Image (tube, rainbow, N blue to C red; front, side, top):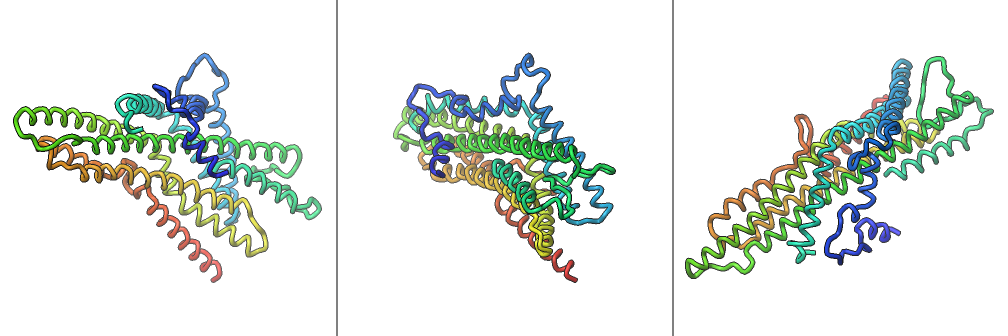
Length: 399
């Protein structure tokens, strides 16, 4: 099953024997979801009164407002598990609103991505022919609700459970029809969030793969930079080899500039999201793990808090892994430059090679004051810190 999913992801069964492959047809699912989120090919005459992004934003805003009210109630009553659960949902729903806002603001960068994809596909099939968590969140959410419904009977005096800890003064969410409305709305929010997260993570994966594909093109060109070049024996050969090297070097520099332009577009879209994850991941994991453990010590298995803890870890790990992979790939350009037999070339190209090597060693443009690099090492430190605070809270509670 895993191999089948992997083959679909890598387009193993796609026919690439034609003269030219349309990137929008190659990434058909990706292009379809871009159109659904009104990033490309937006026709103002269609869906004028039914905008998907507005509906998703409205649902997220309503749910976030209700969670803020519930959070204030928990703070007033000083109920730590309630504060943790409601606060975590506030952070998660705020993340959803941030995704939608960044999508709307940075439409031009998505257009640059599609333009770059078309250019790279054209290059590969012309000059480069020689080189040829969300579904689980939904299932778990419904499963946790079913678990609570099966293990809590109406005669024991407990209120009927909800996925979100809604609270409004004077409103009993356990009564009909308020309970049914809240139950349906909470599951709609779960589906909407999963749909939004799928768009964000799929776009991010395609974007990173596109940048790494450009890095591969640069590496291939560097490997061929001095192919059939040897020390000249006369001025005619020297002039011919110099012009050939300059022509090849020009293509390499253009591809390198294009890669960094695409990386800047990626940074403009995802930097806020990734830095938001970096700051909120540790506290959310710590508090949800602590409250779930305390509930378990009291004999209650709080599936919702466990799901929030695991989901937060996964949501932060995937971008960290992608950025680490991207960093390694970009820095491999420096190794390709070093492997080039530059001693056979003219001195004129050596400064360009040095500049490419120095630029390839620079960190990704996903940086801001007060934040760390987005990578697996930072993810590991955040999880270690969360575990330390988790132990500290448990020891303080025992005293």
